[in-house]
Length: 123
Image (tube, rainbow, N blue to C red; front, side):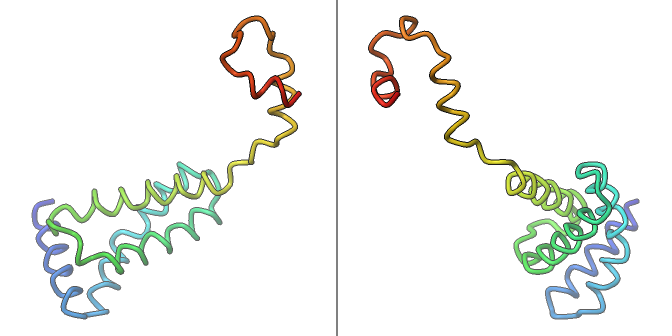
């Protein structure tokens, strides 16, 4: 495993110098692991594939920000984690105003006197 980390670090230094082939090698090493991680989180192979490509693109765009090339794996999985949660936030259904009004009308008015007067005035 130490030998592999040295190889990844060498590839990263080559990528930083503009070597696209080094990035292709790095992608071939990590793409399956990133895809499987995202598949476990998302549950959809199509979504996991799309997000895998976005994660690898972000990694390429931000490779210069990676402080310790030996920590490429955890850094890449953090990008995947963050992208998956952004994906969930985008897909989360919005709470409708009707649902909020139904919940607020069901709330007893005597429980919190004067605390939320603007809510009760609008009803």
